[in-house]
Length: 140
Image (cartoon, rainbow, N blue to C red; front, side, top):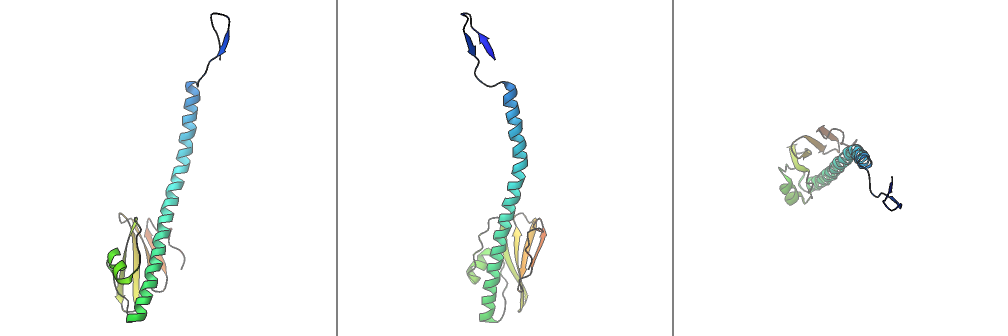
């Protein structure tokens, strides 16, 4: 936009119009609405993959325990797993436990914070998942 000053000099106005600013804000908001859900899904998938890795670690530790004692053992929480199996389980989004209904079977469970879903792994390496975690269990 051109503006003529009182002395006959022509000067160009500087700055953005309200319309230009509003269009920029709308475009940025639209991009954010598209990208943010993708980041959320990626974050959940990464947390589930970490839990799966810890379940595999627990399975390996249980196999070693079985080799020594000829039985599997149940562990109620992360602290017991770490102390008795020497298996690390520091996933902030999950809690871990192990049930051993018989001397030759066990199921390690990763429970999503808030109890919205679980991922399980048994002594044979078979994964299963429920609730919000249903899409994250790998094929055995």
